[in-house]
Image (cartoon, rainbow, N blue to C red):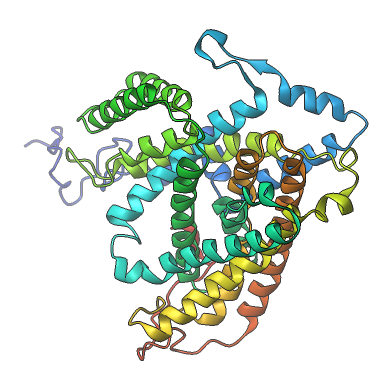
Length: 456
């Protein structure tokens, strides 16, 4: 070959010695150049920001504070008029108030994400091995039973039989809010604590969904429910095909939601059912599972839009018109909720964990000690989103509703503050090499707040 001829290597042929690599705009590994790879789009940056645990919690808190301020301001009538404003087709019985659309419609998006996360955890995540997930799963059950018992005891003592209907209000845990508090105040603690809390909260959500479907469905209409199940089966078929199309899945999901709403079951259950249908293992040669991809796509809408709007309409409690905070919190319903969330959750989580680890072969994950369960139990007492939803379902036309909502907000704030203090206390204390007391040294490599944890 003459000096004027240039050899052009094949796509898989490395350049010869002394020859510069051809300029193709990509690196030898096929990745984009560093300068390009480090410039994510504005949309990508927004998705990363809005799905951060701290951001999600901040948006929830901000929406709730805005609602409380407006609902107790001289312009509070405008807030309640907005919440009661009705939109939707009357012929389909979907002429609903904005607050109902937020609770039944937007919250279904959140529960779809919950369903996808549950499917991922059961098939390929922390819940796939019941032996490893046994302690947080049982702790979640204890964290629901004890608050319910305490609530019923208080309600029967001072509120009568009608107040007992709200027994499920203090059993719920708000995943987004709890993880946000842990991310801020749990820095330096092993990431296994987050896994424990996430597993507990996921099981808690699953049980809460079952409670809503079983105990808060007054009249069941079988025809729309049957059609909804047919739609879910069709969704399962379409979402497993080699090529999926949003313009087929989205309208079908809306139809399923409308049918579940018409059946009498709370419409958020539709989101969970559809989420469960998404494949949790990679199929058709894909590199990642579709549960992971769908969660990545939908979670920004859930965390940045659906949850804050629901919190805005659900947290607007008028303390001015309700006789003041003292009178509202003094009702047996409110006392039962506060005792259940702040005290009952901690007792249930700690008590069951202590019994299980002492009386059975089950043990906590490496790096976690029983003392770490005090802040986890307090974090589980942050009911907020799901507790507010159950409060609306428990007392839809009762004077207990406002009192229950005020109690949920107060108890969630109190639990968050106590959990923050407990997390900092826990982080400052010296940790042993065998925190879970299984006779083996703990192998802890990542901690909340470090670089490896941020990249998870």
